[in-house]
Length: 106
Image 1 (spheres, helix red, strand yellow):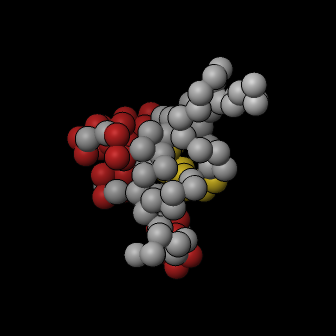
Image 2: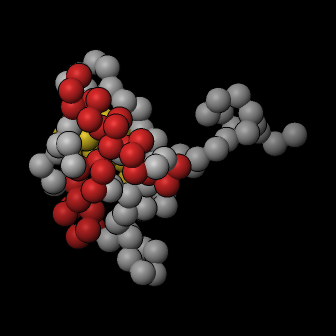
């Protein structure tokens, strides 16, 4: 994978045109594009740039109607032609304090 890549940003926080433009730019520059915790959309896949499929605690894009993890859907999406790597996000989203460090009890 390239040393320079487009950082993961959730599809839920970006417009379709933004995801498409970021992926097209990454593909043109030979970079990978992180999918973020949101689902892997058609806009991530359209330019066929290298993707890092991120999955977090919310299982967005690969969960059942009961909100359990759907292994079959995950494998289907993660084994697509453009997906080059999978990133497992083991922490939660926004964190109080300094960066990713949670403050201890007071």
